[in-house]
Amino acid sequence: MIRNFARINSIPHYRVEFSSDDKDTTSKTDSNPNVTNTTEPTSQIPVISQVSNTPTIIPALTAPTLLPALVPMPTSTSFINPHEEYQYLNLIHEIMQQNQKHTSRNGDTISVFGAAMVFSLEQGVIPILTTKQMAWKTCLKELLWFIQGQTDNQLLQSVGVHIWDGNASRDFLDSRGLRQNAEGDLGPIYGHQWRHFNAKYHNHETDYTGQGVDQLDYIIKCLKDPIERFSRRLVMSAWNPCQLDEMALPPCHVLCQFNVDNQNRLSCALYQRSGDVGLGVPFNIASYSFLTHLLAKHCGLVPHEFVHYLGNTHIYDDHIDTLKLQLLRRPFPFPRVEISVLRENINDYKFDDFKILKYQSYDSIPMKMRK
Image 1: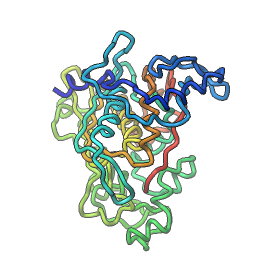
Image 2: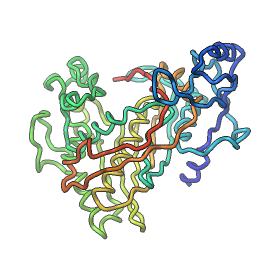
Image 3: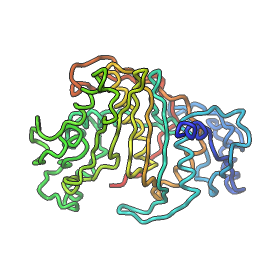
Image 4: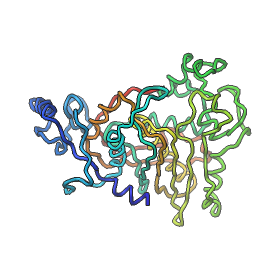
């Protein structure tokens, strides 16, 4: 059922409609030599910007005043190639259409409860979004940090990753009641739970070898076993109620399950309790797809699918206009990933072991990250 839904959802369920004011704004860009001269945004062809080698459609300078209209199916699909990225774009559109407003812990949102997407990982494909430029290097470095069981933000900073800085600050840790934590010590978050589930947490400098439950190691051992790889118990949880209050931030992507079919194809299903659609969800799609490719390589399997389930699926109010612009963009083919070496220990994989091939995207879309 979910795959039929994913196929239907792989073409846009909306068409772009502007008010007269928006059309006027679009026409003002006609003097710009970098912009295709057209008043129909959906028919614009990506061009090469003079300031970037990234193909980009340059839309109106301000977001459309009207949300792209929802239709049962596009009025004409002859020019639309089905693309799995439209699942994400349709999700943005649905949340805006529902317009369910809430005031949350860290800001005002619009949200829906319950969403699902399916992405193919076959032939080395990796679903790194193309309708904006993704910081996939940051995503991969964070994943390798998780895999090593690390919780020290300074290790991420040392490789140029700053996505945890806000949650690792002195002020934020104090607001969580973690005054005993040194600045940068995030507590028993993802990496600790993946590799040392429920081990008593002291600090980010402690050696936890042999303590707690190494969920990732258990999954790897099963995946390498010709019988156990078909187990229905290949589950890795980051949600540990016993230690939530010790974490700088309780986990958003809480549980993943791996599955091997009768063709030795490996799939991953993720349940995410809370999804920041503008920033977090694209990152999570890429991260768990990287993880699935890595485990397939490491365990002698074939990568197959990433299935993404979301609970509270939300857009922050200051991301709405920016994401409306993203709906104007047509996806490029997803890139491919190659892992150049087979290492003996999962902890030993390095960033340089991964190569992304043929990643073509639009320019990045700046959005404020919430703590």
